Length: 113
Image 1 (cartoon, helix red, strand yellow):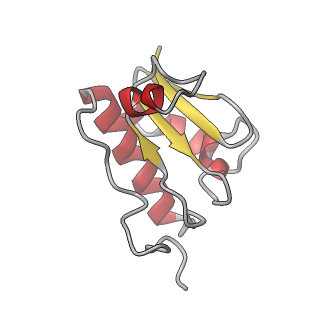
Image 2 (tube, rainbow, N blue to C red):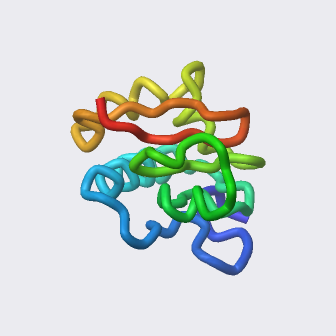
């Protein structure tokens, strides 16, 4: 299996419906960085809208612009404060006015500054 490709027969990297403009920008920045570094999704769906996340009954990230799941995948390398690509993500022009915060050990959320 190639890194950064579909691993479960569905598009694990798909942009969720009904994201705000800031959520769309964050999604684009994260996907671009993941492709650049050939990161694996680990077979799980990576992106959720805040509304979808709240509907799941999740506690954190429900008032964000985008939720990023990395349970079993390498997207944590982008989203975790100590990840090797975290600073690179924040330097992206698409992330201007946004920051990413770890919610738990398996997902993070993007918020406006």
